[in-house]
Image (cartoon, rainbow, N blue to C red; front, side, top):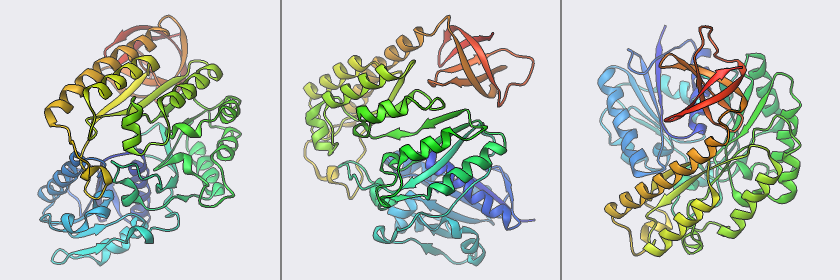
Length: 429
């Protein structure tokens, strides 16, 4: 039996698509093995969101070739899509496969040889129609990621992803519900909805909506939690927030992408909201959802970001009080508007600002978790770490408990006792 190994870089969408490719290989008689084991085929699902993502993708491709010098090495995904010539020039690559061609990967692998190179990458305008990858299970996961949408039409001035993923394409709602039902039947109790621009779901078809999908998922037996991926802030109108608050299975955890807490910077980024609008949305969520967690992404060092603009961001971030935030430094992406903007920020200043924001967000994270110490929360346990079982509350607080009985996949009532670095220590009630 032939063997195939995978390495996945980047976002939850890539994680989902890797699982879809695994299923296709298995249906065609392949055995999926760990990356690092001997394999006939090595698939690297690449990311290109930053220059570090590109670098990591190149490193993993070269590593795959070193581990398996006789394997077919296939680079797929976003980096392969936007820079196929660059990827083709990496020594040892046999296949370069762009987005919307992952469903054909077994055919392309079977047609490949060690002595030739093949590229299967379509232009952005040809990335039309939702690619029919699907799953019914996950390897080594308790919470099931479910992709419902692809593509982005926002064109934020710093972002390469619209070029890597193409126009908005929505998945058929019936397919979504059927897949969620299969996942539930296979033991998954939490579904995490994801997409490249999740809140654009249904805009291309006109007859689908994210709210309807959520309502249908909420009625499925066996599904106990529904969690949303990253959300565009302006999507969260007052009416929508009230509607969502009536869905008892929807987790009160909202990842609202901020990027900057300064209106001038947001305008240059081509973000379509102001800090005032963002704050109103946060307040409305907190009014309608008990225990609401607001998480986000924040970029530092965007071109033209002055010290005053950065201070505005710091002040706004302190005001919001995020339960968790991912801080990252602006990275030039060739082909984006921001790449040609004047007043690029030095790496030294980016690093300094990053550390300042990380400290601010660490304090707000701790303040948020302090509110729940002594309270009993429902925790879905996932795996064992350092002799403790780890899981998450509905509002995404990581909790660990001691238990002689395996807890993977179970939901237990846990009293939160003490903060311990990246997690809260709990005791099963």
